[in-house]
Length: 204
Image (cartoon, rainbow, N blue to C red; front, side, top):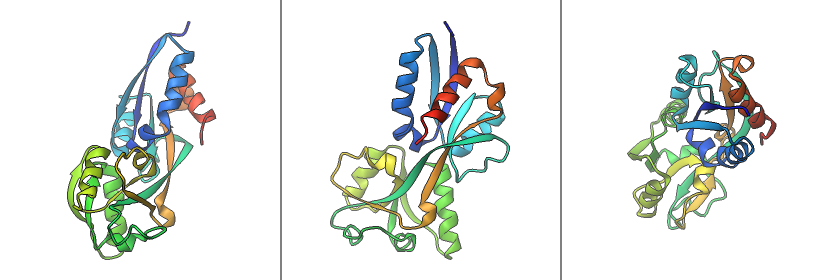
């Protein structure tokens, strides 16, 4: 008999893999509940939670989370996507330094873009980003056409329908943690708290 709407924000990686099956099970089990689901960059999600414009959010650990309560729910590997004819395609994995001499087809993910730029700056380099696109399909189209290579979440890369090489990024920092966040889990509305507990229980 519990009724209500849950305001949930998610980053791209969680939307691609972790959340859809879990939200499907939750809504099937609770027919009187609804979810306002919006995909945003992790930085915007943190600010929306702080400003009380959302109940809960899922973000990557490359975002500053000090003002929020957090719970680790999944991991996310960064991968390099390249055409099969590219020099990197025959490798088992790719070092980040190898990418810095390549043109990049970027995903329009502010948090990931900032994180990669910071990693490049530590090596005294910068990414050569030729274009940024909002959908995985468009990124895959440009990579297949030889415009450049891309770095994205493995969860996103699994959805690519084109025949491309997908190689893990070799660095330890390329494995990111995804966190469920709230201002205060104990103070959430009853229906939002119910979803938060189920996501924690079904963590990877």
